[in-house]
Length: 193
Image 1 (cartoon, rainbow, N blue to C red):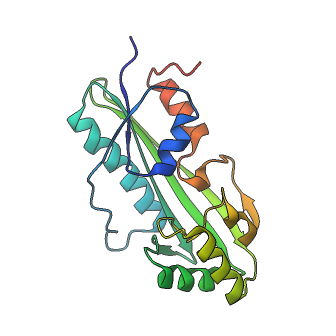
Image 2: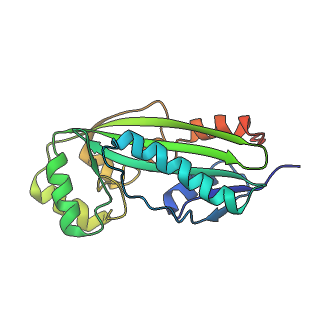
């Protein structure tokens, strides 16, 4: 009998991605403080939060296989958070024009009952085009990506802001690296096909 599968996330993007696997799953909010620790790099932050999210939900549902994920946009070693509003998104996109960012996307799979714990990172290098203020404003009015790290949705019109994406796990940029997730789910005993 297959263990219940839970996505420890409130992200609609991660939920949509996990739906691609055609597995029944539940969604539970992880209720984890996402504040960076002193001296923590964006990569370390993403990895820690993915694991903390999975563990927080697994503690409440010990028989389940729990997926946690986190993404931190990194520009020149600095973490860029979700903008939250138009003004911050405008400022972020102005800083990012012509720059290369790394979206540090981490995923963790935990099952308390079996002691299973795995975590992995799928860094995605993204090169932003040189963008005019008018193009930034037009994009933000069209898509309003205020809940997205880096103020852009590559799965939508935001792709027009980019000149290159480099990743070995194509869904990582949207928020859940499905190749790595599938590998960990198989290792945890979840039948995918």
